[in-house]
Image: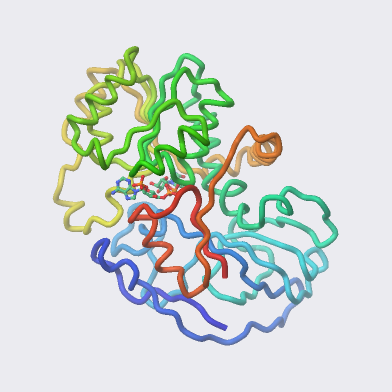
Length: 353
Ligand code: NDP
């Protein structure tokens, strides 16, 4: 058996890959009723993992050096002493980065994806990896973010940063195709991503922030594309794109803070010293803006059923389309995590074990 433990706290983007160490460990053994052994199939790498790698907490828990990394994963039961979870059941939950895991069904966010007797489930069509992607946490973030937090309406002109990623691709489509927003503009890095979100996913327009690479260029491009003004901003990145939005967003608009990935690898010294976003609060007052932060887990507890009713339907009907970037090999988990920050993924990035 093998596992990834936290080896060192990265100081910035250059050394994130060396944060973890792969080491061998014992094969799990069932010793109690209700336990079962899982063979890991897919592991999710997510930007939020960065907060656990830091010395001081930003909100969530801090991982101690030597602890086994945890994230969402999909696994198959290969041995079981649990009558409800027999061999060949496919499950998901937040669990340790191990090839083989001992579990009992009380793990955080544990859910049965498919029972051995289930036939023709959506997962047979679109793959079990989607249980941590378009049918999992990132997509739930998009769902609650647009439908509950932003509550996007047909009159809205919405801008989304990080638009070609797991959350952004789905959030933009829900706003456009489900809520009928007047205009949805995605901000993403590079032509390939911008073409994808417009031509394949149905965004109205895209802006390559690597081309429009200063606040002023971004302001001008946004003004050109939105003559009637921007009424909602769904922020996944922070940085100069967010600065540009604060300069021009309409009065009484909503700014939904979903993520700030451009700051996740800043050193803690930088974060504590700098006033990264000058004047945001003054602009919020004078423009009567609503800044709404949220975490997906707040909503999952309340109305997960709605998501699991709507999203499979939208996928089956071809209304919502999704992309995955699948990286082969358990040993490549650190590299896959790094790819989130180098922007090498389109849609959800998942490691196939
Ligand atoms: P993505 O699939 O969007 O992957 C990350 C993407 O971020 C990259 O592909 C890259 O795209 C972009 N990126 C990386 N570094 C920068 C940078 N310095 N400036 C601008 N863009 C950058 O990840 P997710 O969809 O999983 O997450 C997106 C955001 O949503 C993150 O901020 C995450 O923390 C947040 N999130 C929040 C949740 C919540 O409950 N509030 C839950 C889940 C995610 P590009 O090539 O375009 O640069």
